[in-house]
Structure formats: C-alpha cells, structure tokens
Length: 387
Ligand SMILES: [Zn+2]
Ligand SMILES: [Zn+2]
Image 1 (cartoon, protein in one colour):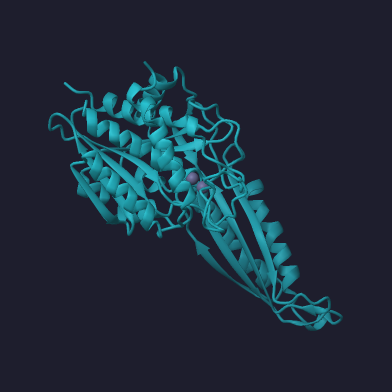
Image 2 (cartoon, rainbow, N blue to C red):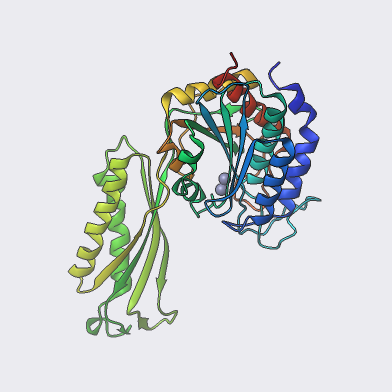
C-alpha cells in the first residue's frame, strides 16, 4: 500500500490545519502564532519532548521509537510566508493584507505535523525522530539560526531531510537529484561615486551613469569569459538607482544591486573575486570610485549521495516511481546550512498544475498531503527499521 491508510484518513484534518496557517500568514522570524500551534499539536500528539525558541522561533519535536538506537533522523518543514498581496480569492485566503503563504510552507508545516501524529501513534521504528519546524526560510536564514543555536548537537541528529512542493510536477510524484540542487545566492550593492554636474557640461563632471553602465557590461564577462562554460553561474544586476530623476543632471552617485548564483564553491569564490576586481578598477579608470557591499547569501543546497538514494527509495515506495534526475534550480534554499553539517537530502513533491511559487495566485495543493506525509513516515520506517 503506497499511501499510508492512516494518513489518507487524516487528510481532511491535515488540510484544515494547512488552511488555518494559510489564513494567518506570518513573516520571517515573526511566526509566533504558527510556532505556538505547532508546539501545542506536537504535545497533543504525545511527542516525548517539544522544545520552542530554537533559532528564535523554531520548534523541535522529539519522538522516540521502540528501542534505543543512537540514530536520530531530522525531518524539516518551514513555517514562514511572504510579503505578497494574495489574489487567489480562496475562502481561506490570507486575512493579513500584504502577507501570503505563496511558497507552500503552510503545506510543508501541515504535512510534517500529519507525519508527527502518525509517528507518535505508531512508533514503528527504532531510534529517534526530530521534527524540525523552522522560521525565516524566505531570506532570513532561519535554518542557519537553528543550526547556530546548537540544534544538531542538542538532539544528536545524525541525518536530515527536507521537502519542498514543486508546481508543474504531478501531484503525488517526487523528484530529487544527488549533488547540487539549489544555488548559492549571494548579493551585492555597488555604490559608484563620481562628480555630479550639469548634463550639458559632461567635461566638468565624472559621469556615474556611464561608469555604472560599463560595470554592468563588465560583470557579464564573469559568466561568459571567466567561468568554465560547462558550469553554471548567473550574474544579474537588478537595480540601477541614480540620485536624481532630472533630465539635465549628472548624478554624483549611482547604486547598483544584483545577485550571483552558483552551485560550486570554486565558482562562488570566482564570482566574488572577479566582481571585486572589476568594479573599483573600472570606476577608477573613469576617474571615479566604487564601494562594494558584498552580502553572502545561502550556500548551495547539495544533496548527499547515499541519503538521496534513501529518500528516493521512500518516495518510490509511496509514489511508485521517482524522478532521480531533477533539474538543478538557480533559486536558493536555507536547508543548505543543515546539509553542510549532517548528511541528508532535499526532495521535491508535485504541486500539480498550479501558479508558480511566489506568485500572488499560488496555492499549495491539499491533494499532495497524503503522499507528502506518507513520504516522511515511510522514510523514518525505512531508515530506522524496527528490529
Ligand atoms: Zn519561497
Ligand atoms: Zn519555499
């Protein structure tokens, strides 16, 4: 039986939790309501331990199996929403204007709660399950906050898994790949300073718009001329701000912003190094100067080989087959911080034909709940097989 009967029975109940989270979205670390409900439910299910306030507002629930194996498997869901105005028109649409569960973290949290209920009831495993509910996946590095707060050592987590829904992938299906899956997401802000002046007297000024334009062009040489063409790097300048909107003023300062996305450490370092070499020298060559505010983002999410196989096997049991050659994505994911310190893997679950994540018309597909919750339960029962 691929989907666990008990979890199929629980689908409506789990969907109701999901819709409640959807109606009450919270951002970043400010997930007090959601985290409070999660902790309350974990206690109600009979978890052996429920710890709140890890990584500020993260929650960990512990369920011990039938015998005391040392193995501790971490299962992770994210709880935070996005600053987006929802346009779904759903009866349970966001009640908070400008906040929306547009990445499906409402579904991730509900599915892991469903698995927790099942695992606490059945305990058909040896060893321990750590249910990890994290804040601030969307740009706040909540995963890092929980790791930095000692989550891995405190609960003795020996391997960990994460799951994200994937619009476009059939509901109930899974896809995964070994190695780099999501990109490192570094950001930069460049401030170019020249000499402002009258647009009709360019010879009396140092034109920052011209310098910034040369910088933008030169940054494109990182991907096209410096990086091995077989490997992937994205360099995008996304913002060009001058100090003035006038037609006849050469601005004293221009600010550029953008992001560099990479899968490999060497390329990540190359992108940073080339940007830092090009920018001041180009500005200097034109008689101006430039400062760089380099903001390191999430590292690449790199699936471990053996754990990818384990996750794929659990997914295959639930779904019949599994795509083990998923396309890597240039988006970021802060489960990367967990995968830097313990073996594990990140898997995608189909959300069907929905709007894409981060779109105001997106909605998590409740039909995915039995498969997602069964995957978690199956993974635990396979990895911590009872003697
Ligand atoms: Zn997202
Ligand atoms: Zn997400």
